[in-house]
Image (cartoon, rainbow, N blue to C red):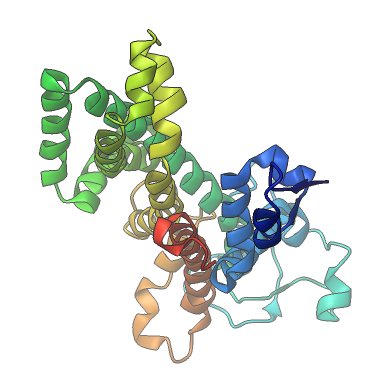
Length: 346
């Protein structure tokens, strides 16, 4: 552990400048990254978001223990207890395709046999199983789509802003044309076209979300790079003959990426909602796939009877809301921490 000390023999400076110890962890991260991390763990909003995200990470990792799969070859297939259309209440007896009983089950529920903890949906799909394994689907689709769109947007926006001229005009006109299309509607149409070609899975919806999801990142990163690329340290790098790739990835992007990263953290929840919406409409995955939108779709025919069958929409709906809320809280806190006007206040 080292200390920041005033240099020279200036006693007045030594009396006025506060002494602060710097840990090795701070030295390893660097002062700016350490400030960001410290701000995230000091903000109540970000702590709440992190706790929610950590909870869902635990559920996703422990899914085989929390809800043992009936068919190990296809764990994302929600098991069915028969084929009746009418939902069954919470705690009802499980008679067909009964999962193995995990070690925690009896201690938590006080029962020796599996029951439908959250009830069953139309077609006797177990809601609890769909909620648990749907967490993995949410992480898989949300992270994959956001990382892919983020990468495409950064590349397109960076090239457009750095080189300018005709390159900027061509790329940005493409972005403008695609922005004209209604986002969710365009995604739905493309997914509907891709589904017969690729087959019913999560891939058509993910490809469709990626195809139209990078546009916002490209615009944001382009604007930030345009404000940075004429700064003195960038001009100095050009004068000494640094390659364009080094200037862009070493000097410009690290200083222009923060706004885009905040947008990406918020978009994980948005992508999850969009995927659930398309799944609810019957686009993409097979019926019975462990996805929160698919579980919610089972409640469509029972909306008029939700006073009795409230659980078929409550459990997947609450789970989806909390998952999106976790990422939104984290994104809002990250935005505040990265805002230069908030320095010294967090």
